[in-house]
Image 1 (tube, one colour):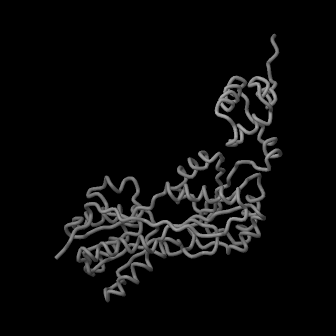
Image 2 (cartoon, rainbow, N blue to C red):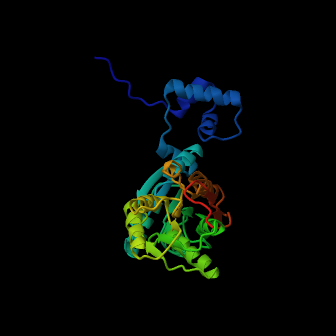
Image 3 (tube, helix red, strand yellow):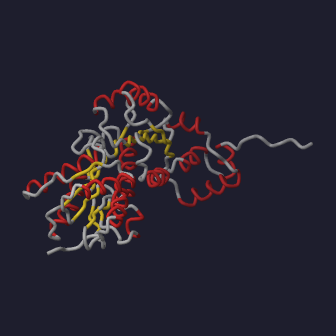
Length: 337
């Protein structure tokens, strides 16, 4: 019976086949720019012929890097940017490892879990928490020198972070309704422990109060479709008149649309409806939903680029990158007399 060939090809085998030094092979594998294109092509061809696969442990020892990023999610339900994060990490030469810390985990358990994740063989951390989180100084201590970036945290937080300006986005939605002539605007707010939901609600209240308009016609949902339905039913049973409804996310707007229709009200003829997020389905509702778009590809790209920049330049000044949502006007809102 013939022997099974189990010997793995080595970096020296690739170098011999390509007719270059093993240092050149190493530079090609690590995407070093100072390699002639012809030489790079020779090395890549040799890698394919030998089915060479770099030994990850050896690579870590040689370079001091694992080329792995740890993404920590504090609520797996809010995972919309995840596919884009995986894409941008791969494009920049990194593997993205994903872990979850359950929301509202006790502080001590959160600290222990974060410290354990930061001690793994990773180059950087991306922490995606839509809830109030540990202070920057405490995070720095727990991460023990591993670069980290927060995504979706509080605006103005003095920490390496990437955020959407939620107040700006909510302001676009409310101002749009005011510009259309609406003066009785109701709201389905999101859960107030959620950073984005709280910012959107506070903006709703502050803009209407500044105009001398009522801002108390508001019911809380949980960002899911059924809660939007139930919240709208609750608003309708109060008997308080409203000509426009601001839902703090598109999923609740879907529930609202169903409840309004069930009550014999048409959108936008009787009630104008605005959502938030611009989920894929928003453009295909009947009527298509006016909403506020947050470009998830951009926030994913920015967060990966930021943490990679910190890995490459540990002395980079800490700052917050702020992105701005945009209003997408469709047929669920209309001008009134």
